[in-house]
Length: 83
Length: 384
Image 1 (cartoon, each protein chain N blue to C red):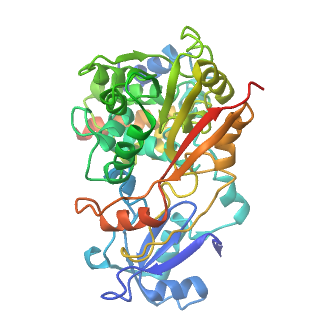
Image 2 (cartoon, each protein chain N blue to C red):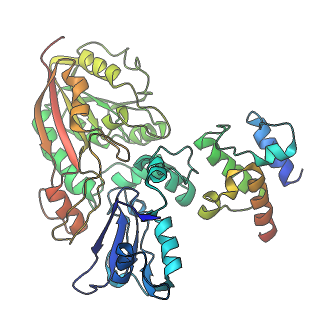
Image 3 (cartoon, one colour):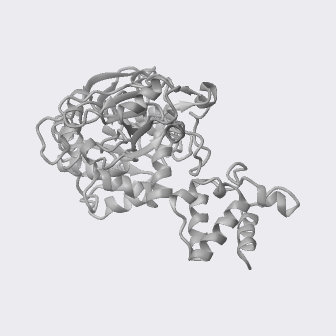
């Protein structure tokens, strides 16, 4: 599975992202739809850091990019490329 | 664009660096260090474009230095600020916007004073607990509950730290207060006992103590050296969680830094049911019993320490309406008890009893005039 598949699978297991098309799912602001709570966010961060062997810094977590599913995937890919 | 009405400026270290000022938004608690020319810009946004400005990035989340460390959120001692950034007007304006010192419009700015939607929310300012939780979970990456233990207690959580205001004020007060209130053989219920340090102080006075806390990690710490005290993990959010304890069985019911969670949201939860707690306290107390409470002071806890360290002052930004703060105003705190037939038989505002060289002098001087905790003794006089 590639990065996108793993991230999408994570959200599917949390109840699924709205929309039928991939573009809709990638554009989803997952924090706004309450698909995961604060502790769920912490679990997600730890899971992706372990899975992808990356480290999210505070500025990543506070970035606009981190707020959408697509942005998160792009960020993870970039961090993986630099790790 | 306009200057935000919530902004103040003041000198830091004026005796050595009269040209190094702090510009602070007192509600967002964000700030920068700047030369007087930046303050001139606040008063005259039409200043020439080619003018240069000195700024220092002095903001930091100072609560991370310690729960009772200087809560002012800027680096003290202008001599330690280092070299300034020399920037042009457009860059300064951008920084002032980021710091909510300049705002686009007041209505949109006020809208941001809402609870955070998640721990990653950066648009809403949220309350103190949300800001602290956001910092601890996303920047420091540590467990907030264990971090809190390390702020108040020495390693191993068997003793209160003496090098901060917990030791210098709260513990020093308890060491004098508890022996006046508790006699050998009395029964004590410690609600929100944390790792049980104060339970053990009361047990050392000969009391038979039951300590209850919702946090299993705290109870595990308490049980490491239980000294015959009963410690139990129970979810105090549940209204009937104390229902199995017999009526009128306690001489003392004690709560320290715990009652506030019945009034303010914490970790995304709605506050626990204070009415249910009061009913249980009343049912469990003996007719001659006392409810003892030691809580963060309704006015002064976590307010910024401004001015010189020998004579600090503060700015009170809210009281009856709590947006940022972590504890209720005095009338709201006591009303549920008074309505159920309790009377206040003693009230004290804690202050340092003696000098303590291991504590920040500014902290001690602040606490001498702005009490950080409030103690209450209440008794039941009516069954109404």
